[in-house]
Amino acid sequence: MVKPFVPQLVYVEPRALDYPLGRELVNKFEKMDIEIRETTSHNQVRNLPGENDFQRYRMAKSTLVIGIRKTLKFDTSKPSAEYAIPFATGCMGHCHYCYLQTTMGSKPYIRSYVNLEDIFESAENYMKERAPEITRFEASCTSDIVGVDHLTHTLKHAIEYFGESEYGKLRFVTKFSHVDHLLDAKHNGRTRFRFSINDDYVIKYFEPGTSRLNERIEAAVKIANAGYPLGFIVAPIYLHEGWEEGYEEMFEKLVSELPEHAKKDLTFEFIQHRFTKPAKRVIQKNYPMTKLELDENKRKWKWGRYGIGKYVYTNDEQKAMKESLEHAMHEHFPEATLEYFT
Ligand code: SF4
Image (tube, protein in one colour):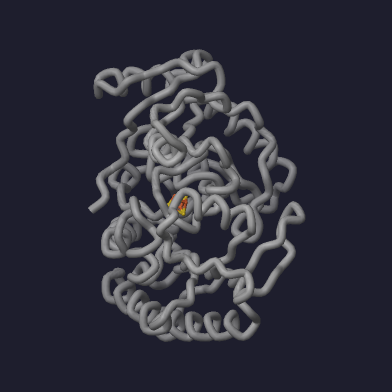
């Protein structure tokens, strides 16, 4: 069982102390006897302990920076939502394939932003632009925010904020099961709580430091019983020996554990494994023993965002995985919706 995250080291930007959440977090970590250092900016954390890159990378993944979000222009977040809402950056998990490996580069520490009012104000402007259309905000584009939320309660604030909103909805995804503090949040059905799930092989070999499948399913049951709209992202779908049986077992476990009422308004998203050349270099540096298959010759090259090409499965493989997983989904959850396969 993965215990709730506790940072080994905390950095704080002095300006974060101008905000109630900043002061509250510093008090909390002082009481927990965690070393707190000052940093001029959350982008400039230097001198992390460790004798080499390998050790410093692991230390960074256990380091929390309390900072201010200055960029209040939100990125788009297709296909799952209109915008990414930035409450945190970074993650304590060690998934070998994680996209954060490249997007965070030399700064893999976890940043939590305390100027929530500024972030909500910006969200409000985006909603106004699109009203009366609903605007969906994705809170897990640059982090697994649930993994740190038992400490910060940022997400809980956001859930209640969007619970009151007329034109906004919130969504996020997690591989962590530490959801108890979110069960009494007044969500008003406006937050879709998704869990990222996978078959036993992928979780065992590629997702260290995250909750196991049975823990994620137990958490999903609690979330469904708390009345949240629920969803599952199967990602990354990864072809390995026995993958079809693996994913079938995953669906069987899910259908046997979820309460009947949760099976009605259920969404699935399917995302195949992909990698870029820069990601491959970083993965092999940070996880040199990984079994992750990263052979460009076995994949199809596809244009990605910002002109960086990515390697996806061949057309035949994509067709096979889409058909197989869709079939299992419809068989076990006939009322569920598949939002996309990518
Ligand atoms: Fe990356 Fe998600 Fe794994 Fe965290 S839990 S390391 S964000 S894939």
